Image 1 (cartoon, helix red, strand yellow):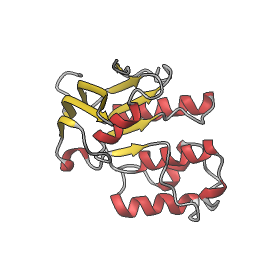
Image 2: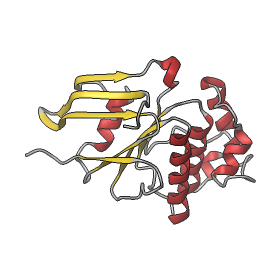
Image 3: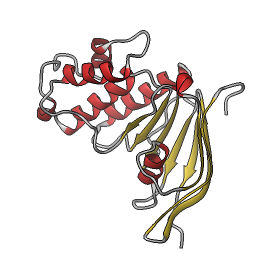
Image 4: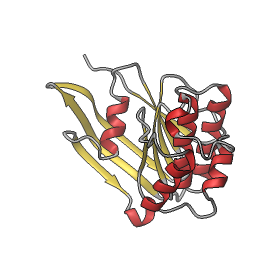
Amino acid sequence: MPDSAPLLLRAHALEFARNEERLFGPLELHVAGGEALLIEGHNGCGKTTLLRVLAGLLGGAHGEICMAPQAEVGPVLFLGHLLGLKGELSVEENLQYAMHLQGCRAGTDVEACLAEVGLQGLEDQPARTLSAGQRKRLGLARMRLLPSRLWLLDEPFANLDLEGIALVNRLVERHLAEGGGALITSHGAYATGAYQTRVLRLGRLQ
């Protein structure tokens, strides 16, 4: 981890079983401010399950998960396949709703985040009418808007073209430069920005 960087997350002897079959683990992992952990592996090896366990969305795991105090890390943000957008709300209303619930990152606002992800001009469009790639961009704008130091990104490159993949890398790089950390799952090595990345490879146990 970066020298003197604060530890945001550590997991010790973490494992998860489904129908009495161990899906992954035991794992040792950590993420500090300023670094990203790329989690690779084939379909079904437990990448999404691992992130959902770390996010507190899925119980039943064994082992120890230690998070930095919420006062230091803010809300832990999870970006999954289901983006949690409200289809009847507009693009801007979705971000305003999230901001009212969880606050706003210092130095940014809704307009700036939409411009950063390339959704300017679509502020009044209902989220349900967006393409898959545009919805992913809206989810990324929400990540950028909210005051979190720890991002859990499940296949953030899915449904994005090369420009969108570069956008994800830029957003992660900026997040890390501001002292944040990220766990990223991916089928391929798309997390190739100029930021520090460690790799954890999961594989189904026999």
